[in-house]
Image (cartoon, rainbow, N blue to C red; front, side, top):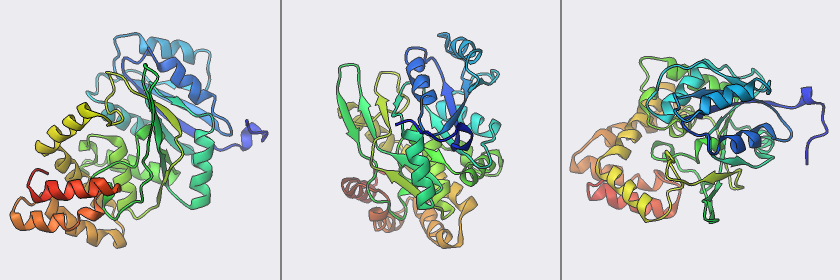
Length: 314
């Protein structure tokens, strides 16, 4: 139900929208954001040099929608995360409000932001993410569960959900922006902004909550940068990336980034894990495998990564 509270008293959320050739689904996505109940929404969009008219459509829409701001073109960034990194550096969230991220092709539940603001406030958390419902053009719908219990080092190897489900507190948004602006931080080399943000949060010793209630319909199509990871094709892609050491390289980046902001209670563990992630000898491999139970949230995934580490695949 829509909130009956005066608009000025509702919590404010700034939504960062990164776009690239998304005109097919962008109108539905944007409508679902602007229709959020129980919050004041402001959307800031940055288009990554689309060739399908996406930016022109955004500019036209913004002329009639004061809650939408379209930033000037900055040239191609090369990847989705880099476009989000630009947005984080350019947009200052409200001092008493929150920061969220949006893809260009999903559909948000009407209470997505209001629910997550309440969870963040009531639980004393700095970050929120959620499970999502993957859907495709053939009508298939599958809940992608993300709320398996967090483990001590899961933030080194996985995201707590897709970035489009994230909500950040003001101090977390400021922490992320500061690290992305720091030339000595490896943060910008992280391939995905969602995994990086989670690593910085947990490395700092701050609380992150994963909501088991799906907050959006997560569209699956042939242009997804990162889809729902279900089925044979995504599994084969993941195996190829594992064999190429991509996942391990990202874990090292997350560990180094987290160490830049580490609290005393997390620093010792990170200083123990980083050389094991960087090591390639048999001894380092077996020591790292002994921590496999803390590196993934889902029980099946913990067993798989242990085998991959021991056999030298990961």
